[in-house]
Image (cartoon, rainbow, N blue to C red; front, side, top):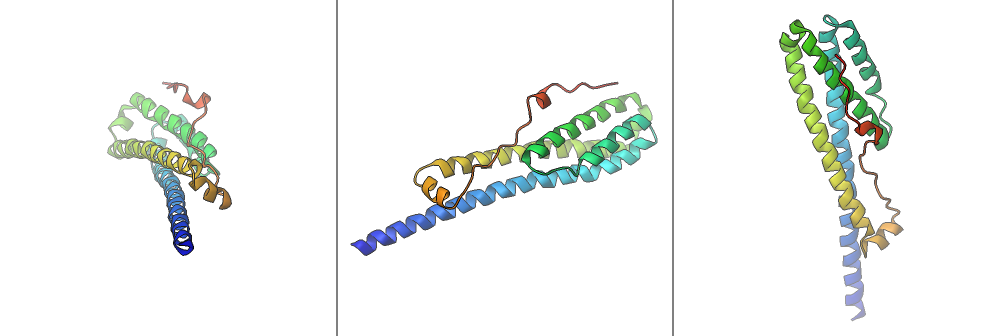
Length: 175
């Protein structure tokens, strides 16, 4: 009888442990997906800078600032802040392109615009998936009996991908 109880407890611990590990890995994977999409966007930006250089010096300078910011990603909070700034500057550039008919008609620029728009959508999805994964993970490490094992294994809550209240303000497009 005691042996059966010990086996049941061991099986329960193994199941709980595997569940916690799977949730943690899912969060890490979701975080890396955000990183992958931000890298994709960062790779597209220099091409946009090169296409824009011939048309509008000011806008290419703005994009050069974006290129400098793209590598400053230390943690999820910094990623959120920099990502928002980059998105705002790209939105500004795409709106400003309306003032340059030749640029607006440039096929390479149009292709880059479509790629960046698609990438921004993928970034938004990756952020949502990350936050969903974090919510499930955080809930999991708080539920009984998972919380006991999580505490023993020193599993900590993961932060959500959030933008600050200041970053939620409407973007001002300067034409």
